[in-house]
Image (tube, each protein chain N blue to C red):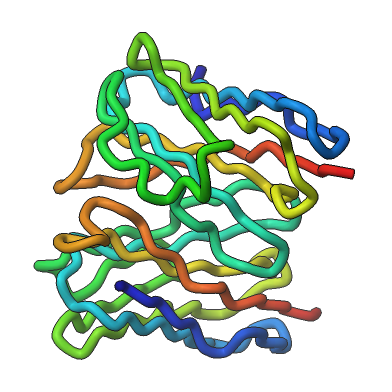
Length: 115
Length: 116
């Protein structure tokens, strides 16, 4: 059974810092990995999607990397802003077994960027 | 509409009652997913539809939970004899592609269910 772990559980940083959020998964048989953002009381917004054959994706100040063989992904946020404060969720789409076609989520990292 | 729409946004009910939650996916998306998110946790898979059929319902917790998508668009999640432990946010997502080549998922804002 696929398990996804995110570290740290919470992170508080001053505005302007560069930061890294970590995600690890136990089964490397994945089709893709997505990073989502969730604001309090809201749904999920997709930030970046990395296919299993890719190593990284970039969007603005966000960069996500994928090391499928070691079961790891990182989300790098450059020059953080207070508006980046949210919960960041990592999810993998399974390629086989009981995880086939499903997204398995981590518990999220709660990010607070203070002015 | 432009995004995934879920209704109601909030539902408060009493233990033992029947509840229906509705999801209207992005037009043209063939794949539709239901997830459940408890406080402080990541979403957990419930059921996946490819077109009208439930391709995988292995995440439904028990037989009180049922979902339909009769015309391959709108889906309804039905919960019978609700229990306090059913309280959570129920999220719906859609994708242009289905398993195994699941593309980017687009989520609705969820239906927050509270069972008193």
